[in-house]
Length: 407
Image 1 (cartoon, one colour):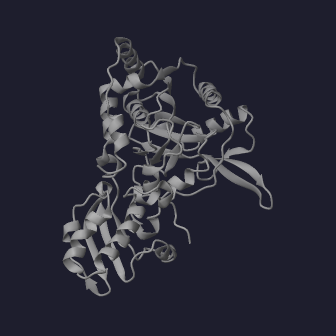
Image 2: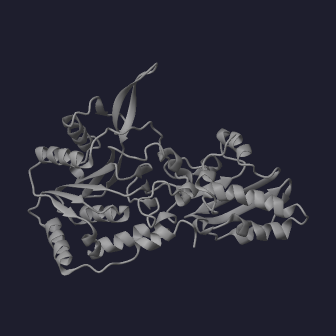
Image 3: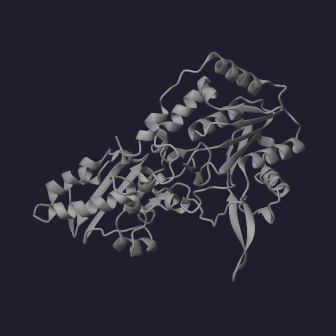
């Protein structure tokens, strides 16, 4: 089992819920589908990111076609990538799998989640409340509910907050010598279907991990990968200094002002037993979804752009050695390994799932043994394997070893 998979296994454990919880999720199912329930508000008290996204998807599929829904939730520390993104260009997987500095529970490492909507990669934790608005597609507007959140923030005393041209929510802050600069506090993603659409966004309130976020979201392999998926856009970020309950209350108030007051419902672990939510949860937690949905990409130790030229020396690839491959759905399809003008036999690498590689030594050993005789072989193989481990999040080094190497 690869080093990141232990925490996913722990989350798959199933608990038996008392009858009162069965009745509760039955009430939830009825409320969701009630055709007279035009404006619905739900707040999750589960920190499970897979469950919360599955509840959201259930609301998208099951609520009346003409209804508008507000769903609020807070996840435990997790990195959420977009539907069409590449985890090896968006996330420092080695750091994510091995860092233990922010764990609240040793059973819950920082989790990697692929959501069903597009957009970029974000970091969630207990100081970040997420909002989701589900509406008829005919009424969809990228800024409408972002502006709703801005009004909620202003009502709580947040100044100079606005929606920018990228539909993000930013706070303008004065920086000595630079004047006013925008700091992102909320990004959004969207999913549109024929009848229903969802706009969901984050809001950085009081994240205790804000200084560590860049370590998770700076993928060391990015300069060496040419990807077809969607790339994230980096922005300066900040907390707004509010409590979660304050924010939730203000957003609900603005939602009710826009539409109509309705009784809210608290959801959580009990809803895991709704069959459709349970299936959605299992899909989101599966490695086939998290890694196997990755669009095709090409990797080369020679790099794919100018940035890689500077990076190459820092990763200490063996001299005159070039490894390249094409992967589709996270599986190696074609590979090439060349030392100088000599090509090694790499056919045995085809079909290897990148996320299942525990140590690149095991992947590189067959072509090196077959095609590169001599006493220098073990050293060259080990050097290349170590660099590949760090670029792709394999191995079992200290978390800091996966962070951008020093010059």
